[in-house]
Amino acid sequence: MITVTRVNLISLSHHFAVLFIVIFIISVSLKLFARTLSSYDKLRKRGAFLDQFRKESIFKDNLDEFDDARNVVQLLVDEYNAATKPDYQVKRAIISGQKK
Image (cartoon, rainbow, N blue to C red; front, top):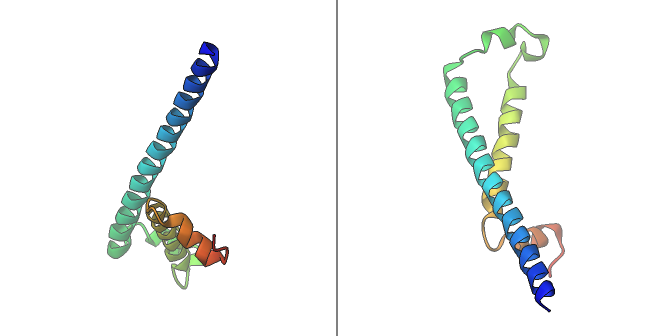
């Protein structure tokens, strides 16, 4: 019986360690992505470093590729923020039509 308890405690502590690492990575990632968006917005507002890109054919008419990429990162930040809310799974189930 003692070995079963030790195994259970080791297993439980392992799960908590993994959970802590995942939460830490998400927290750091969220801050990194938010900081990246802030820096991008400042540089884009000033038009910094865009001259070299405008020489390329894809950016000759507009810089939509940059704006699209910015929007994708914003969606990622929004999803991370939504995932921290207690009702996140409920909202996801309702959106996908799988009420539980």
